[in-house]
Structures are given as structure tokens and as C-alpha cells.
Image 1 (spheres, rainbow, N blue to C red):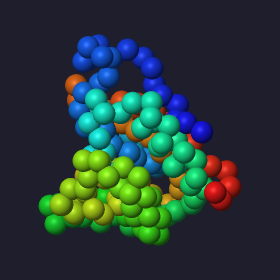
Image 2 (image 1 turned 120 degrees about the vertical axis):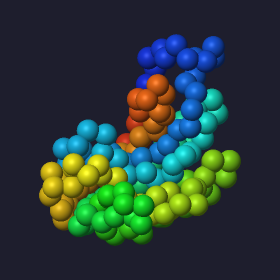
Image 3 (image 1 turned 90 degrees about the horizontal axis):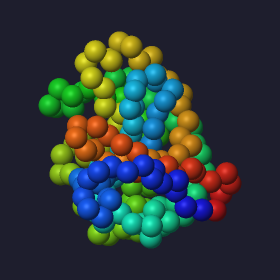
Image 4 (image 1 turned 90 degrees about the vertical axis):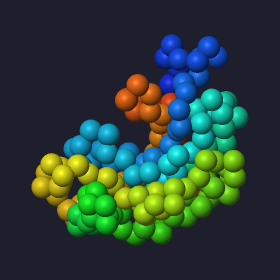
Length: 165
């Protein structure tokens, strides 16, 4: 099962592919904050490297993941002061990220910072009080996104499977 690519023209590089680094994320619409996502692999690949083969492989990988429930814990802060909500249990996010790195060794990979290595839902300071925590949420899909012109755009959506693979 492949992903659902976004085919609208972007007007970017001549081959029609957007430029910039992509990322793989799990959307969290339950918290009511636009663009709320937990990164699985950020960055992933340069958008110019994403072709139908990559989309197909990602679709197969995510189709093998059963939708799951997790809890967004109490707000926390990184040493830098950036606010976030930690997903619990964190192990499922780490296993998915490890599977992505194994399947795509060419991925740009993992930031050496805490922000890149700890699964989390980033929050702006003004959002801390607006988000009820702890909060039970459901992971049903992953998104491949790219940031261009200051906007994050979804390149493909990958629904999780319905049963164990």
C-alpha cells in the first residue's frame, strides 16, 4: 500500500519536486493546535531525493504499523527553554524511528541535539496552558512534509495498517 502523494504543482525546481529537507511526522490533531506533530525522523531526505520508490517503501513500512494510542504527558522544557509534551510510552516512537533509519540508511539522520533525539510534541509558550495534559491521543498515520517559503507542506500521507503485519 503506497502513500497518498500531494500532486499540486509547486513552481519550485524545474523537475517539479520541491526543494528542502523533508521530515516524517505523526500528526496530533486532538490537541487543537494547528500543525501539531511529533517528529519520527527530522530531517529525513532532501525533497529532491523523494521519488515514487521512496513513497512506495514508506507506504509499505507504515502499513505494517498498527494504529496505537499514547498519552501526551505533562509539559516539560529542554535545557534551551523550548517547551514540549512528551509522548508516553516513548518506546514505540523510537522503534518506528529505528525502523526508518534501518530502511533508509541514506536518511540525513539524526540531530545531535536533544530536540532531534527525544520524541516530543513541540509547543510555543502561549500554547502551554491551552493544551490539556495528560491527554490520550491516537496515532493513525504518518506524514512526509517539507518546509518551503516558510510553510510546511504535506507531500504524502501514510495510513497505518489495520492489523499486525
